[in-house]
Amino acid sequence: MIRVNDRFEIEDEISRLVRISGLVPWRITEITGITDNLLVREGQPLPCVLDEIWGFVAEQEVFAHNATFDRRFLDAFAQRTRRSFRFPLECSIPVFKKLLPGRKGYGLPVLAEAMQVNGGGAHRALADCRVLLECLRRAHLGAVVDSATSLCDPA
Image (cartoon, rainbow, N blue to C red):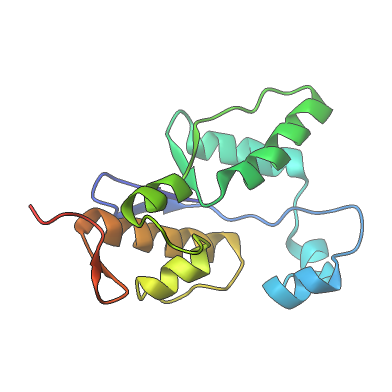
């Protein structure tokens, strides 16, 4: 996660790996580079990670790309542990749909390529946060998309 100010400048970051009970599926390792050994060395229990994240987030609004995906995991954990972990989690996809209507897709790698943002495709949380931040920054500042479509009407 990345905390930014109203000028989209990074103020703080947090990134944690969560220890899992089983083995990391080979496809996940292929996509992310996360291995069983990495989780054994650096992974932390989910409750500890979530406590840190909730402290990091506090009452601030949080944006995620495809937030409903993330929300399902958070809600399932909250239900299993009878803990209330609710914070404002906003999805960035509607923002881009409003600014870029009619696109075939709104996946982060597609948007990053269209907006000429490097670093897409890592499928690691912090890298994806940085890509999303740069896409939002460019959208907010009226960057040009696909070399022809302006994200924001010029003032």
